[in-house]
Length: 409
Image 1 (cartoon, helix red, strand yellow):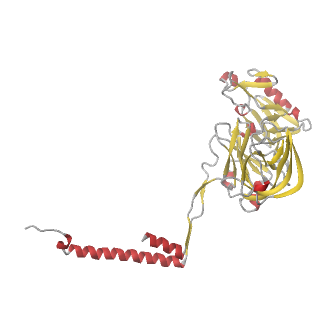
Image 2 (cartoon, rainbow, N blue to C red):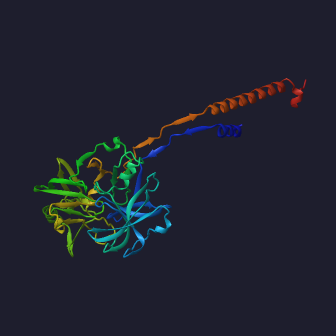
Image 3 (cartoon, one colour):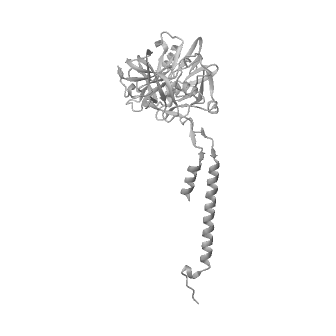
């Protein structure tokens, strides 16, 4: 009977869309010693998989091309293996703080693992790379605030694959998982979020009005800005801030060959010389803890680990610029809203951001007229079977001999 029912359903038509439990769309990051964070991206048809740093400090997506000069990557994009690639003669050069890349502009489908994002978009195939040493990923996914360069999330939202182009970074130190989230509900976005407008429509920058290092307060007479950059492993600070912190650190830390090493697991007495960094932006207070600007390495033989602080003297052309790299992001879940030119901050925790955020697809059942016919026929057949069994059992009760029973007097 079940076989007949299934046959009737397939023949006459039933459409059932059952609800299913979902979590917030996200992409896990690999963590290289708390200084590089990178995830997966798929490019081409059929897709070729690469690792990329999700970099809020740059704008372009690039991966190395097969035959790239100076590239030392594990994976290379092979144009002849993609059926959908469109190659141009336009060559672009990108200068980073530590080297440069030169690439040819192309277009192809780009997507994320376990996602419905599959967008045709421009990116660079690198043909030459110079002086970029120590890069653990194959390439870089630029996610800065440049309105003239649409990123993957901008394009996916425009194509209707996402409800908005907002993405969220949650960077954690080992051993906790780091992630990027997207396609986020308004309820989740505004759950205790502090919003600060970006001061630039090209980069994710916030104005820094004041800083506090222990009991010392710095009021900036000239405008100071901080660029939020997930592609940088350091905190590049205003020189006065850096000197104040350094003077305190060296009371319990040590300096070797120009590098400062501090206790990996400081005692209560040592902690008094290891200050948190407090900055104020538009009346909001942001705190960068000591534990976030030290590269924790418990395998260190002497118990001392390197800190990730630098003076902005290295930014000779930008004296009013600071760069808040990965150590800043350990303290906050950071929301990037390009459409509204703003950045949101939620208190970081060691759990997964979307644990409480689960939602369900609509539960819909569409029945056709023929389905009702098959259902009624099934009910009639089941009823007939029960009636036949009832008549048969009644006849057997009325005839003991036919049941093989004996009666003794």
